[in-house]
Image (cartoon, rainbow, N blue to C red; front, top):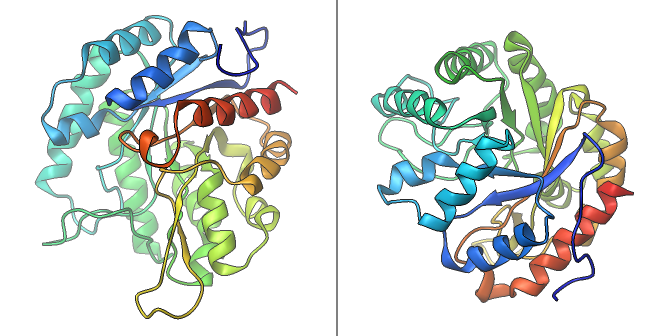
Length: 300
């Protein structure tokens, strides 16, 4: 048996611990190992990645989604809606219609998306980009969250962003999110690795960054790893990126107990790893060790 925890029965109501499900073969063995040992309380599904690829969801993945949906343990997480794009595109209209269908099909507890934007004019796809804190951007974000709520019929929220152009972006993001989320009483998905990226890239202590967010709105934590990228100039320190393709950094594990203590409305803790990367930078056993460490910390 891989790992120290052979099985686990949940005796508490909050927070639940689970996985961001990836529909790839390398992720299947990892996921089923944990599900078979009753270590997965909840699953998060980024439904729109399948929409965009136009591929069929593998049968093993459909089975897990249907099971967790039937048990009321399924979270929805969007990636490509681009809620802070300057205009309302045809793609966004199509996306919201797909969301209606998705939420009719499965019992999602809640729906979240990423702070920032991925498309603008001819620029149609990227990692989420930061947004300047202006009245116009706040109004835009509020309108898009209202559209998410109307299309899904679920509580809606936003995830904090790893990327920042300057220190001001870093320091204002929590206040910006509060201004947007307050309109619909939305929740915050607080990604601890995203905080780590900003902390090391801009030399700001993680605990200080944590306190800059509306922690009373945090219903969900994300925990993941990432990678380092060298600057194109060849000079200066490497940049930490939220690529979900490596082990969870030690500093993220260290801040987790503080985040658990400081987020009174927390309900879910989700472990993320990008599909297609498990054999490249570490095998299933490494991921299971990270997941078990999260469980041990949450369970106290």
